[in-house]
Amino acid sequence: MALYSSFIAANKFGLGIQPGELTEIDSDPRGWLLAQLPLAVRLPPRYQGMEPSARLIQTAYDDYRARQMIQQDGRVSPNEVQQFREIRERNAAFFREQANQRLAVAIESDTPFAERLVRFWSNHFSISLGTNKPTTLYAGLAYENEAIRANMNGRFEEMLISVATHPVMLTYLDNITSIGPNSTAAQQRNGLGLNENYARETLELHTLGVDGGYTQDDVIALARILTGWTVNVPTRNGNLPNPQATPGSFVFYPVLHEPGTQQLLGKSFFNTGVQQGISALRDLARHPSTAYFIAGKLARHFVADQPPASAVEKLAQVFAQTQGDLPSLHTALVELDEAWDPAMKKLKTAEDFVVSTTRALPGVPLSDEVLKILTDTLASFNQRAFTAPSPAGWPEQAEHWGGPDALLKRIEFINMVGGAVGPDFDARDIAPLILPEDADLQTAVRRSESRTQALTLLLASPQFQWRA
Image (cartoon, rainbow, N blue to C red; front, side, top):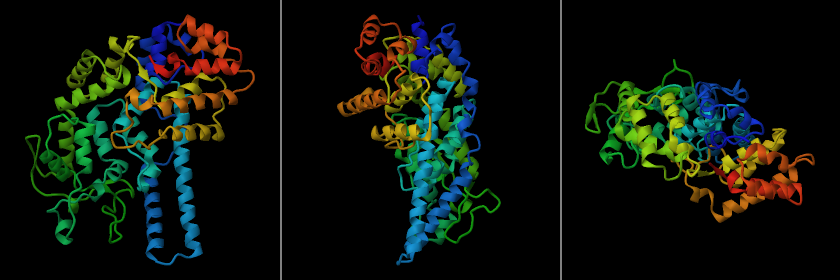
């Protein structure tokens, strides 16, 4: 019988148990997790050959300009209607493919702890495709791989800067529309000014936290510091901000930048161009409030909705002592005794539930048809990839995922799975391979009147519904 710690390693730290996996983990559950950390930057096979975000963003911009030109005509010809339709259909197909591939990667992953960590940080630096911004629609998955996955073995500040200089984030949180009030561009055209959106979310959601000690003056100062951080797509005059840079990539555009020294959290940041912003972000990443804010989020995700203060304190100390070294922080997470306490548990999110269910079923072919069904299921749960309801990302609390409507949808999904599995599948054979020893549950599953009933008991059980 598998050790309970093996169950926690695969179910709480990982993405759900695959039959036979517990036996592999039994010899050293913590070692199994730690061995995955260096592999977090590895690009999954399904993502090999994906186009870089710059190229995708240029395509998105071209589509946006085509739609603008059609709309500005006033009269729309049949050919333009068809062009509009083709653009819309291509966008929908591309979005669907991103969602399908991202879901498949989680189901297939042989490094599920590393993949969960990537998704934790992606949710921390959340973007949403549910906005009327074609840049995010096209390049959400590229953003996750380039800004998050690629920085998993570095320090938090490097990930923060990579996010802050990524065109998808700059577009999503409107920094591309933020212009210094005293910049060259503002002097040439009236009505241009700051957009504080990204600066505020950087302070509130990405670094210090809402109670981290900043003021509205700090929001304004950071917004000024980050003016000129934009995307290399044609401006109103049709020219690229930087003709030497790759189209669709991040660029610093001096004519948009607010001149002068800015005071952020009591410290002066001199006007050194793009370096002014990088220095400010490094300071925010190293701030004590950031250490505790990040530690709290990690503990809530991997320990419990209300984690013990001791767990948060241990993680915050590691963050501070290592200047946010992510591998050290992730190692400390595995070493938290609180995370291995069976009483500390997390209700699975909709994505966790769908992924872990599919991982538990041997031999399920991840065809386009199956992936479409699964992503449509996540859409019905309102948790399709890159559609978080706000920049805060997906909620952690059980109350968000365990309401009556959500639980009813889980039962409907279980029934759908029960009707879809082949006649050779028997949950009574699978239960001992994916759940910890529980005499009552094992007996109930074993005595089920049918294979469908056995599967329903298994997947609806608290032992399966919770990460514990």
